[in-house]
Every structure is written in C-alpha cells, then in structure tokens.
Image (cartoon, rainbow, N blue to C red):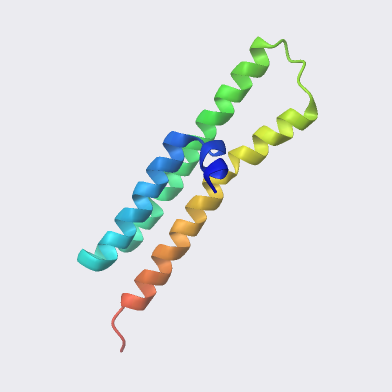
Length: 104
C-alpha cells in the first residue's frame, strides 16, 4: 500500500488522503459538505497525474527519446493510481451522502 502511495506521487496522494479525512470528518460534523468534498478529489487527481506525466515527458526529452516501452507503460500505470484513489474517495462520499439523506 505504501508503494502505491509513493508511485502515485507523494504530494498528490497526501492531498487526496487529506480530502478523504475531510470527507469522513464532514460526515460527522457537516453532512452537507460530504459530496462537495468528495468531488474535490477529482481535480486534485487530474492535476497530480498531468503534473507527473509532464515530468515524465521532460525526462524522456532529456534522454533523447530512447526509452523502452516497458518503462513508458510503467509510467502510465503509475499515472492511473491517483485516479483510482480519487474514484474510491468519490464512491465513499456518495455512499455517506446517500446514507445521510433524510428518508421520505
């Protein structure tokens, strides 16, 4: 689990973890904020992944473009980690939001 955290980008994954903690805290203190906080994880994941992609392309450019496909595919696989974590956070926030909705 720690390796996924590092592979996904420490800053991005830390921000996403803070959003998850905020969602869980909001479920207790401010239920109206749960869905909004959960959806905040999507742009954070997009920005983090695109930042990592830009850094990877910069490294490829500096190396002269001679990069093995295995290395490139590994980079793309690492780029998807924040998206998966973000989707899990959104899923948790939707479940909490649905459970806290008043019944009619």
